[in-house]
Amino acid sequence: MLPAVSRTDGGYRQYSEAEAHTLRFVKRARALGFSMEEIGELVGLWQNRRRASASASVRRIGQKHEQDLAQRVAAMQEMQQTLRHLIHCCQGNERPECPMLQELAGHDVPAAVSLRP
Image 1 (spheres, rainbow, N blue to C red):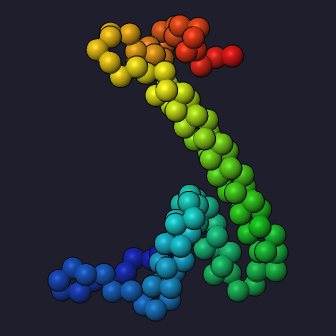
Image 2: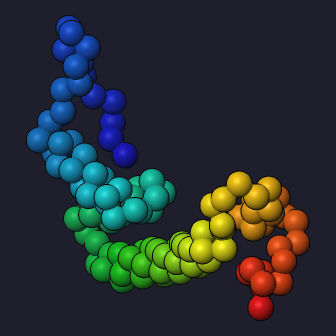
Image 3: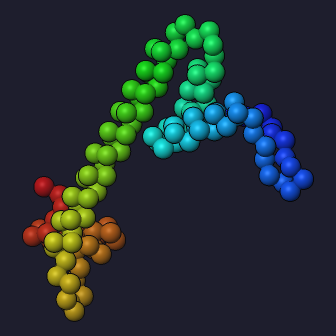
């Protein structure tokens, strides 16, 4: 996304103001969870001064990313619910039976603590 930058004698990179601005753009996009591929596309659209249809492309990229995030959030909420249930079923005592370990090992969990409906 950036051309090779010059370095000082001490090895530090020297960025121009425009390159520093691009780095801030990338950092903000990464903070929102965009992939490097998506960021590359967004940077290209942002830097294209003749971007007549850029807004539609940016919106498409943003919508797809938001949908991906929504799916990931739903999957994580499902994992949390499953884990919460397994923790609830765990006796936390000296007995060798453990529903959480059984589930993780892929063994059948007794019906009283089964995760499956």
